[in-house]
Image 1 (tube, rainbow, N blue to C red):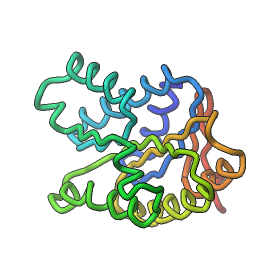
Image 2: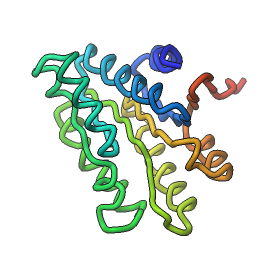
Image 3: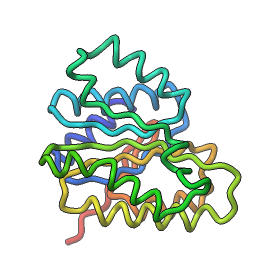
Image 4: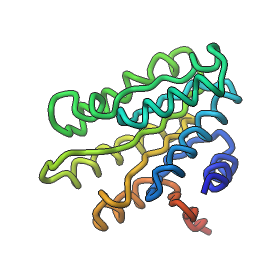
Length: 186
């Protein structure tokens, strides 16, 4: 649902948004990453992309074909294994601090920044409370900063319990074919 991502970005109109992207189709996923990057670049924003090595190769290839060197300089790609396992385990505090340090130069420069992270983990036990802690902290940080942050999770790897938690930590959810926005509170 490439248009779904466009609709979500338009809905939030450059204001803060913490979006849970629960994907199944990897080709559609990669197209959505590129849509996100393209929209951000056209707005002159910095884009922080946290991705796995396999997808980084694909993204870099498309970036070089579709954008100028100057436009590509706005895209900052970090390997997600290095990002999420900086101290050899999925430590929510370390990951959160790494996130803040990664975007601080843009915020300090009063530049707009969007982030996209593919969240992956190994066979670590007790991962659900760790992801919950990280996502809740990230959600608090994003509020009031006009950052759009997409957190992507593969359907095949996301237990139902984690999906339910992620739906409460994000202001919207995107799947391959649907958009879920919170009900307005009256």
